[in-house]
Length: 239
Length: 183
Image 1: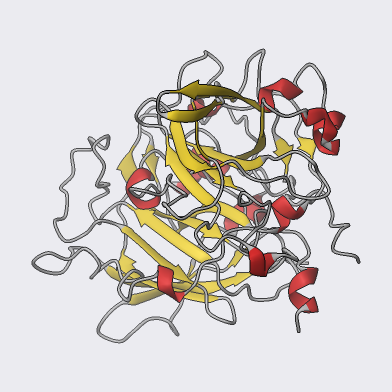
Image 2: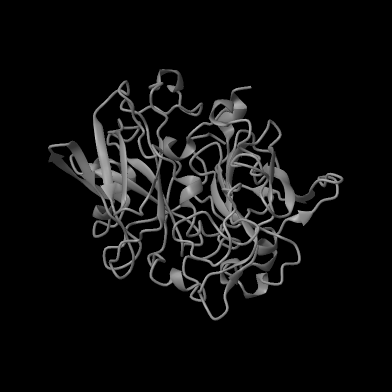
């Protein structure tokens, strides 16, 4: 296939959430109503920001150290690792992954977060890394707590870590959330439930991983991510 | 084929992680081209400003080149311009200090790619911004859009004491809903 004739649709709407999902109240006045217009892939969409080692500091991936002031953050230390793949199953190298999350008590460092839970002076809850040549990434962090959010009666978000991924071009972009296995709040959460396809939604639940777990130190969770994007013919042509 | 990972909302408290000081300033003194300010608001269906959105832009440099290996003119791209910017909307809207991009062949008119994230948006919205001082109907995609709606993609050029400002609002819904693309 010529790289000038990339498919115009990137997102699979059978697995992606709709804009309007009224149980998640904030969608009601924010969801676009017109059908999306197909976008042919021009050079604008087949390029994107390129990140390299110089963009990442040595502790950026370790949220237990990157904001420590006078000790270790409180809570359960965890390792989150996985692989970023494209739809053909190949690892995607050089993806910028940024994560952000609440602390162990379910509180964000943000002036608008007024949840009555303690802040942790040694935890900001933000980190970043790049995937390696095979698409693997790894973070060290603290297991986040659940927190209330007032969307509906007795609404609590399941524990989650936000992920932002910037891939190799403008089409390879994803913001999502990683959840934890067995969380009883998932079935009440309209953000999670907003994904219509049950199998698709379950792909956002990480799995406990004994291989990643380090003895006497931290539990490990595995979370693989599949990025949508155009065929990257031009990368193959270089070799 | 591997099934895609679904999107989830960027959430209300992204700002401390994704919005960094200077992240919406794409230029330095050595960046080539006309330096501009692109600014606007994200508005909801009640015409109320959305103050917890995140807007990202991606664009060519002033010569229409991308610092990316897919661009045949990659080696000639401005080394002082990455082309990616990110702005929150907490303080009255988004703004970017950037350059007016050059047109990217085969289109004879310039444009910038845009993504909008916000609380209440389970998935981002993709748009484009064109410039009011060009005949944008020369662009095949722009010309193919509904003439009643395509003006929602045009930023208005204003000359101010502080320099060239392009003003562009993003309307998530309502009678003047911005055109969003399937990407």
